[in-house]
Length: 440
Image 1: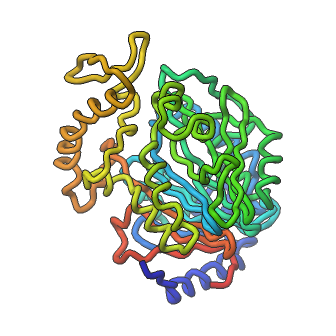
Image 2 (image 1 turned 120 degrees about the vertical axis):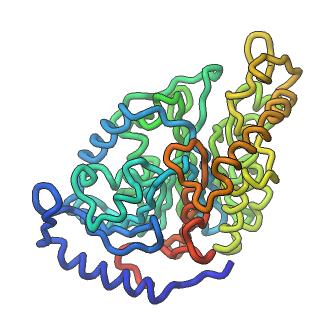
């Protein structure tokens, strides 16, 4: 895939950003609340993708953190996401998977200032509040001023620190203690790291002084974990039985790997379990029977050695686990995506559900394979409803896609974005996203 630098487009963005920055101290938006607003709509990069610059002098992180906590603690049940992320060489890549709907994708630039020690660029996507109608407005105002920056799913700052959030799926059979209360929303962690951390070690120090609340996924019974990278290493931060656990992966010229040699890959299962038992082993499933994302983890692993070479190699990895297009291709047998819906383990042993009846199985492998027998029928219905549509983004259709893929270059401190599996782009060139004021 050849990278289009988009010189004309980016020159336009730069010009608009300069105007917005000059107006930041004096511009009032008549459509906003309380006069001046702390953000400026800049330019639409693609359909459903817009770039916004924020005024950090008007940004109060603790106020935003509280607002996002209050928003999500009462939100509908959020089902587990299918996100995947990895780091190798100078690249930190991620897919953000979410339900297909009328979502918009915001590229948010945060300059350094009163509210942010470090300048950053981040992606906000997959949230019911950020939809096509919002991006069609000339401004973003009202309650968004209180929490929008804290909805960052991933990003990179001017110190070359990249971070992202993924969900970990839990089911009633899992033994765990989930932290539902705390002084830092799991939704705010990426923003907190980007604004304040100059290294992985500094990020870990900051997070260790806060208690992370799993408010985003509490009602779904899930958890979250985080991948944080700098030039030298990557950390995966997880919360096991309510305790913060940090797994380190060091870049050594043979990939970014843990002490046991496992690469820095993160999907929707506990990396703790991979380190302890190995991915998808009998011991792994005996202890974490409903781990989601095993096959996506393994797919990234199969291409991992190429990930240190180029942006293009990383984008190819991202596309290999694009959720909608790969699932609909029928080339992938993603058994673990069945999760607890069609198989499980109880006091009588492993089983799967066929035609609404419990069928005993000898092992997790047999349970998953039998459960998968129900998937072609599901996929046929999926295809009939949405797969043949030119635009399958029907609100609340229950189908999933990769809402965005982004590859962050830790050395160049910028990213390359593909939104909505390319459904709306006219070519396959990624959008180059940069720090505010960064030369292009």
